[in-house]
Length: 219
Length: 228
Image 1 (cartoon, rainbow over the protein chains, first blue to last red):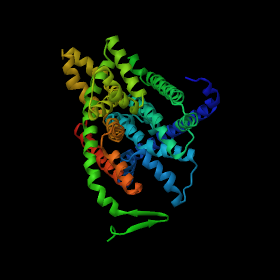
Image 2 (image 1 turned 60 degrees about the vertical axis):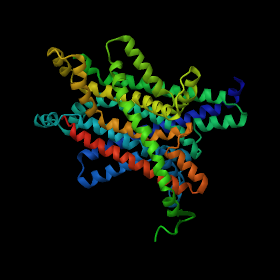
Image 3 (image 1 turned 90 degrees about the horizontal axis):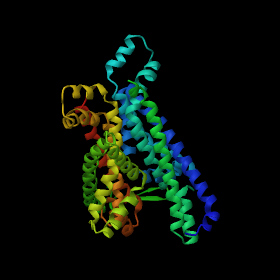
Image 4 (image 1 turned 120 degrees about the vertical axis):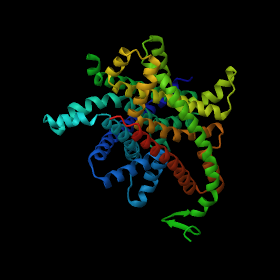
């Protein structure tokens, strides 16, 4: 191990890590928001809209992420969508993640017995309160673990962004390896950074889970 | 015929003939993809149930072991796990053929995710059911086999289908240990024909069909197991 290398390449690695984090967090949050919207629309919208959304889910979920990224980044300019690498990275993450997230949210919605919602309407609760007070607390118990799973999977998929020259962690690591002809040092740093992300996500997931299962333990 | 000539889109040409010539090879290779992901799914669900049971068991040692299993298999990239199974196990005398290493790596990694999905689903089952089962004197094995697992599978079904679809797609990593599955064969054909666009689109279409079947089966299973 030649630690002196880190002095020279440290800033590049850290900036790569920052880009990775940016794409990952923006992509996960965007994917969750879009996914939640899809799941809600599937619940309440009419049949044609539901079919369209179903087709979207099957197509995006059924094809590899790298191919979607290629189509967006290299095919986009043909139809006038010119994106920088980072924007393309974030957008492709939102698109790729949203069907998985929407399926997770759908499982949450469907786990709530219809009788509870009917009962809530009978006693005069508004739709907003029904979602906030009855649906969400119960469905979060079910979906926190799968959400954590998928956010971890996304954190590892960020590596694929390096193939469209997004200057993220793997890209910087490969640059360092190619310029210095070293392999141990860059990849040790790489695995440390990824491990940090997974540990942070797991910790956050456990926190959120403890928060959303409060009412189960109190009983 | 539309397939007998090359189509031009801007500077890109698209040749249907390349696709038709190579489709049989790709479909032949898809059988390996199906084998790896099918066997991987079986391991994933079977082992996932046990890891999940250990993860929430009263025994502290079991719980720790399951937590360690989950954090290792979720935390280490699958590619690295696969290389460990294939290259490192022989050094301790366990010589696995490439296909077994691929199935084990994919299945055991996925089992960690399955275990977490099931754990979330189990928490959503009212505790009163378990208490009632205890009160009726139902043995723990039957409590799990007849009451908890069926409901957890139903509640977690959409997330499980997500996971199984991801599993089909990560089976492409088996190409790095020399298995001629779909992605590997697509790469080989591209190397011979220099037509990446056509070949990779065909490969993506085959993955899509496999995943569509899983997803439709999942929907049917969901309807069959309807509890609410």
